[in-house]
Image (cartoon, rainbow, N blue to C red; front, side, top):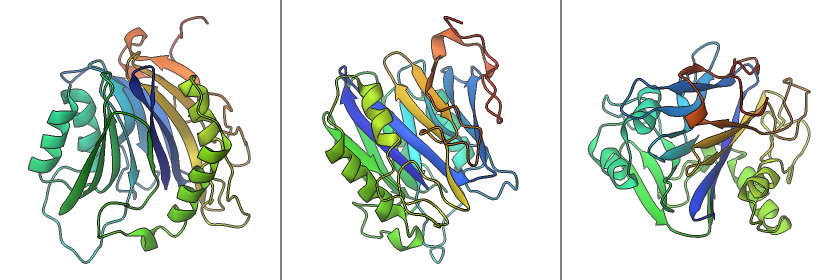
Length: 281
């Protein structure tokens, strides 16, 4: 249950995301330098390890200027899939081994995958690639302008599974309303903050919230992220982007973490404590 956005600004696409999960799930910021390219991203932990994306680097950017984010889409459980790359290996491989979007598209088309969802890939050269991906079917859309967003259902694939995520359409509509409400700003970070914090379509007593800043009974937004591929910066907001402390001790603001300034290892904890010394502190 996530919201992902790609919007053009400063000659490159910025990525924004809300990570929506059960309330006992957490993310942290982590830097890895064990692959071809050093990268920073959010690593997710599910206490029962019962989510397909448990232990995955779910969003991030590498030193080659490649960034990605994703929203899960449930595949049809009746269709068998071959063994292949799982979510955890996929996230690390994308961030650790790729420097072009063309190569990422080729990798997705030529490799057996167990993953499914909407994936946004951006580079620091001004290009965005959307992949609506199932192990047995996919669509790829290239963008060089405008804004693109997804929640947890497909728009291009004919095998849409919107019914498996009953509030996905409502959160998609929530973002459409927010796009009409908030003017496009030259400050892309502030623009994305406005979109990610919105509570359009918010209603009480839902298992999962119907707005992009999501506050459900069983789950909602546990962290929010904004990525600029050019500066290799990930702005991270622990908890809900609006700052509500009802379920988590949310930060209520986006803190910048610059890949070039950080050593490998944990940058924050799963409890929202910042471990790294940041510039200006």
